[in-house]
Length: 106
Length: 114
Image (tube, rainbow over all chains, first blue to last red; front, top):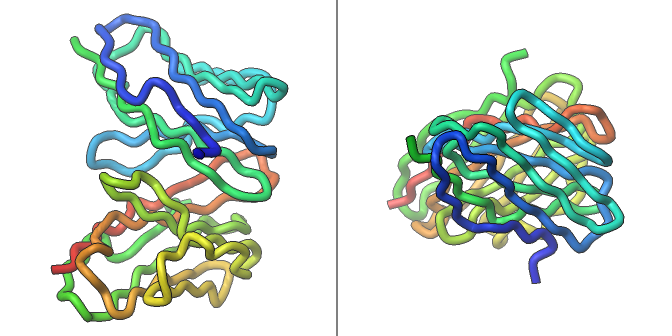
């Protein structure tokens, strides 16, 4: 059983589409993180959330603590958004989702 | 700040040799993590330190792996003896626990054991 589940595992979208990646977790957390990893690249922290919503450019992250669910939205997607997006939770322990591989086609 | 600094960036070694990976966290971050990433398993937490003290090493695969954090600005991950299945990218990350910022990851060390 995975403490953090992401969906979908793989996602292909046309440039300009609105994208949603979901993350559900089963443990108590103090914060949820969304990370981004470009092919062959390093890992960058996009958001850290403990409640509500955060926005950075075309990226929006939301979290519902009661439902233990978070979503990452990308508006007006662009080929440079192609990457693996990883959901991670921190609390008494640290868990990662297996990632969502996003490909945005021009 | 230059970010989390890992060295070396790439390491190729023969099976049986000792490998030492190094990490300098961001100044002021009090938690440091070592992760391993492979195609098969994705990102795995190996060990993390809080205030230089190892808190959870349950992710360390076996006794061949050891990690130290002698001070707040330096940590090492050692594999002795190395095996081909240890080939992976090893990331170090730091965070200010309970702080407003998220993880900062190093660029990783790509280890190949032949």
